[in-house]
Amino acid sequence: MAEKKRLKNLTFLEKMYIPEIVKGLALTLKQMLSPSVTMQYPEVKFEPPASYRGRPVLVQETNGTERCVACGLCSRVCPALAIEVQAAETELEKERYPQKFEINMLRCIFCGFCEEVCPEEAIVMSKDYELVFQNRESAIYGKDKLLVPVDELKDRIDFLRKFKK
Amino acid sequence: MTILETIIIALIKIVLIIVLMLLSVAYTVYFERKIAAWVQNRKGPNRVGWLGLLQPFADVFKLLLKEDIVPEKANKILHTLAPFIALFVSFATYAVITIGPAVEIFGYKINLVVADVNIGILYVLALTSLGVYGITFAGWSSGSKYSLLGGIRSSAQMISYEVSMGFSIAGVIMLSQSLSPMKIVDSQYGWMWNAVVQPIGFITFLVSAFAETNRLPFDLPEAEPELVGGYHTEYSSFKFAGFFLAEYANMIVASMMIVTLYLGGYQIPYIDKLGLNSTLLVFLQIGAFLLKVAFFMFFFIWVRWSLPRFRYDQLMDLGWKVMFPLSLLNLVWVALLIMIFGF
Image (spheres, each protein chain N blue to C red):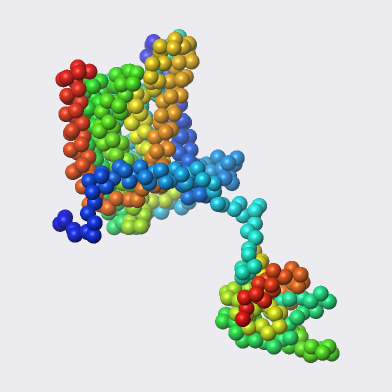
């Protein structure tokens, strides 16, 4: 093989490999003795920070109704077409509410656009990352699964008020 | 001793060695995974059994339950034969490894070695050379280009490094004036370990041992990123388990050889001066041997998770232009020692 031009030719000591090998071995030995960073998942669970985008949920007011006014912006902005909203009227001064609000969790890509576009702070991303379904039907989350009390979402809502423009 | 007694004793030794062997291979695999995990700040297998200690058995069970696939273009006979050659070679080498001094059990004087042949080292060298056939056959008979490349690389690598390995051993043999492992161990009395007397030979032998066992940084025959799996790409189930077992068994043999040839085997320096009870002494010496072997096993694994793989031309450069001249230099050094100091 022809001699190659290099930016820096190796010195004799470097060509012997041995000092470099010893350095490498020392590094790995140091790592061996340092504690592991593994979380033993089912027993120890990861507590996500407020910026974490988990399962999107609907905010449930303290009086038990949803905050959502069924404007349908989330459904429009959703790039994966995962959200379906059907509006209905109420006697309250809020006038509209979602009769049907469904998110297909097989389609959802957790982009958070729905949360970003929502004028009422009614749909937010939660910290829930354990999503398991046995079939496609159960992957479509209706209002029963989507509504979460506002107290549990305080973290995320505070985060949104701080950073959402 | 009658012939019958000799045969029975040999059989007991063989069974013991095979069982210990399989167990130690299983736990080498376990520690390989554990140490890999520690180096990467992980925990490693810890689910199957206490601390994951049953993991190796789960692994073997999984392997045996898999479908045994033979490629359509494979040479069926050689494809089946290859893993058995590899296995046979790695198990047969255990026959001459001495794990301790002679002991007396129930009035029989027993050497702690299956076959105390006077050409033990030559036997090991011959068998490890045969080991190339297992890998080359596996590569060639699979009918796959990746396997073939792996097999070719392996044969070239093993033949190249066998040269420097042989010359390093020659230095040891010159000092001990015997090819019997027991005599070689005896010749390293006290601190006259060959690693101290001939450090260059020790290094060349160590590096060659890495190359011979196809371990990183010389694992070109099974370089995953380039060759899928190397010579065992087309193997599955029991046959793959055979290669897997053989690789780790070879690692243990290599460690045992290094300890026997260069680190005084089962000897603890000057322990006979303490005047200990002979039973205790034997146990201590066996313990010392196992400890030394365990250190080298750890070293093999440690190096694997530290160093990157050599390029093929670098490997050949190192083998022929560095290791071979160094082992010759070592030979000259030993000759000088004998001539001047009369070892």
